[in-house]
Image (cartoon, rainbow over all chains, first blue to last red; front, side, top):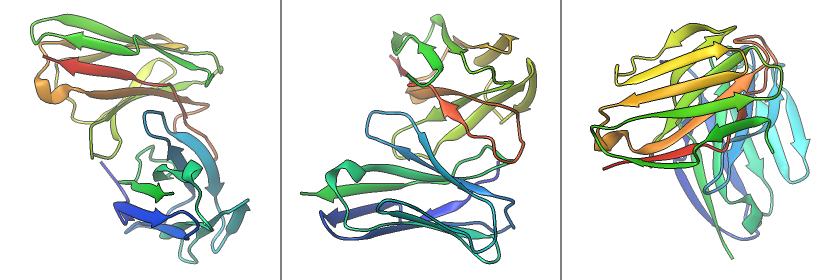
Length: 107
Length: 115
């Protein structure tokens, strides 16, 4: 099945540091969604990006869709312990998820 | 409460057992999915049902057998599983199978251990 690659696979940050995860596809995407899965939990929808170059913000989270619609990023400013979890991108129309980035925040 | 309910939440079964996982969605969605999530692995799509018809079978071994009696219910029948099948099995649903803008809603998952 089709999958997109996410980097990094794991990231440990000190609380207060910034964090970014990248989602890369070899094909042009019609849109992309981001999900968060807390440890022991299930994936929960965060946001959807549709337009080329689109940038959306949710408090400390900034989501970006590349101009070519082949990549996307999620940036968290000043991480908190509540940000811990695995972040997945999901190119829609495919229902396949990216490989995920597991974020650990060290208090 | 996600609108997608899975039972049981935890299951331990022997390799010769037959068991089933159940999923029910209360969202009025037309598409339902089974995903497998193992430790340190990405979410693996197993099956997709749209309006009770199986539309995708992602090379899943025949020891996993899905059943979708109606658009609100989805089962995963398990038979002669292997220890490597131990994983979190996630059921999900969306309004339609592959339309732009569909959000996928996940259940809380069924933790399966094969001994």
